[in-house]
Image (cartoon, rainbow over all chains, first blue to last red; front, side, top):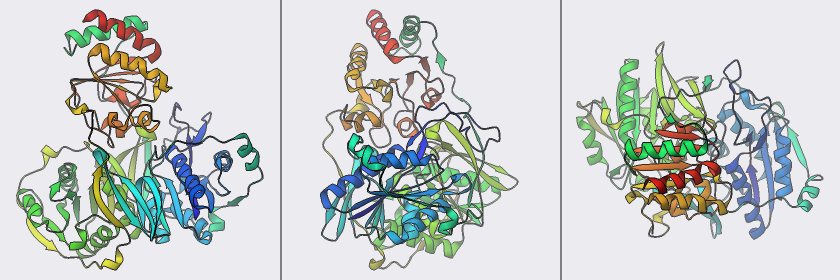
Length: 256
Length: 324
């Protein structure tokens, strides 16, 4: 089974975000980056499928030069090789990003394309499904389990309120993977060593023949949300704050 | 030109977010000087569509086909594509459900558009809608403009619009029969199921103490359990804690877990991603303990302590025991 896993590098989860002066994006100085968490689960899903069924795992990532560290980590965890679309994504809307991904995987003949269900930065939650449509593949989203079946694959889809559903589909197909799919592995020392000699193919939007074009969604302005709710905050030492909170819970909210 | 609300039903039951979407479509139409219509897809949905005849809408489309009985992205996109071609709505709005997340990007792509997902508000400027959505798990807001020609697509976050603001009136119900062939449908959906009977019914608890990523290690959960015990409440968690296997999935609060509305919801080390907030924001009193003063959980909290939970929680346990 040949599996392509699309991964994205995003600001680390605990980052203190500041809005850049033009208010079009955040200030990227001093930020640290990591793999988008749902994409880490997509990679894990891909590696497990390869272990069970044989084949190859190709990591695919679009992003600026710094994305190379995230790609290297994917290789260290067990991806066989990688494709890096070396572009700053700011000028591209989700459709244009997916067009680049589609162009980059076209010659790969993948049986299965996996990606996380959404990114922790833009959070559109659409790249995977758009990619499936561009490639003419069937898809399913928010997937918790994948197994091979006679005609292709059988997946377990998560729905709201604790409901699930199995869906069968032929290959090639695209799945977006939910966080918590399985425990994540760590890269081993051997893996890190091996990763250094694995192939990373570098391409650009231009070499893929994709132009940013006229975006169909435009980020006009970004800003920190105004707090609409007045939260009563308790200050002082932890002991003082705890005492004040309990007093409010007892006499104002009357829940203790 | 009009605004079309595409509503969601399953087995003849409305998804409750459908009426929020309907209210949003009516508001948008009013502000843009347009009309609002609604569509519902399925097999035998004429009666459901009929329920909308008393709403202030131009048209209600019952999109009928036996292949729309069980949801598949292929059948839904085929049907909606034909509906768009026939009636040319300018803007289509959808509830941001798991089902819409599954097919809307495909539908928009087939029209060479990008849907704006998970919208929390809108305003109209110079006759154009600007929508607001959240980035970075709710830490940053963005004003987004639609580029390019109609149709435009948007999905609306749960709770962003109020179902009780749907305007009453009259609407003409029209049945629309798309043509869909079995061969167009590539995925085979099976019955819905739940993993197991839930042993814990968080929905019945008066007090819930919920723990998130801030707890750092599985062993530290005992501390939060102790707080729950002191308060006589149930222990719950945000998704990452259950994903890590530190607590069973049945204790998860949020869009993929349980929806709760206790008298007291005390969130410990939970940043408050929207997927969590939708599961608990109906709680009567919300308390947040978090080291990050900018965490979105404070957006819904009545009381808060900004600080290190490992220092605050032991003091809180002592104070609760003393107060009881």
